[in-house]
Amino acid sequence: MPGHWEGDLTIGLNSSAIGTLVERTTRFTMLLHLPPMPGHGGLREKNGPATAGHGAAAVRDAVATTITTLPEQLRKSLTWDQGAEMAQHARLRVDAGLQIYFADPHSPWRRGTKESTNGLLRQYFPKGTGLARHGRRDLDAVAAVLNSRPRKTLGWKTPAEAFSKQLLLIRQGGVATTG
Image 1 (cartoon, rainbow, N blue to C red):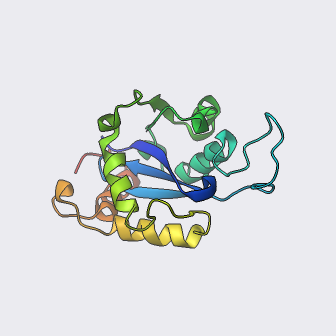
Image 2: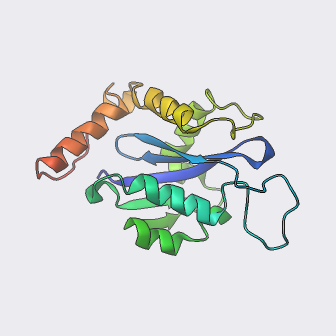
């Protein structure tokens, strides 16, 4: 059933990060721009706000802003790991109209779609590199490449084709289906 997403952060040098949302049925990927906040890299106030750009408030806002661009039928749930970046999950649930679930710790196979996507993302964002230098345009370009890559699991359709089919069904008043 379309509309169920897996999410995670990809972390780079100097605590830089990119957020990832992957729809389980279509493998459609959306990347979240999480730039460092003002004051990042300087002295941090004890118990002050996270300034790396991937604190709970920044991640909540990025997920809500991105996911609410979709029809309600395609934003049913989000499964995330147990990271502190989801500390504001209750507010995200309200802001985005999205059920939030958490994967069991040390069980990456429970979010297999996301783990597979992580491998594809590392082709564009290698481990050990800074991710803050990648702007919104860079992330959109990588997402477009990933979404136009045919997948065996989709019968050699692209995630963009599979996702577009779901959008079309919804616009025509139909119910989103698998495949």
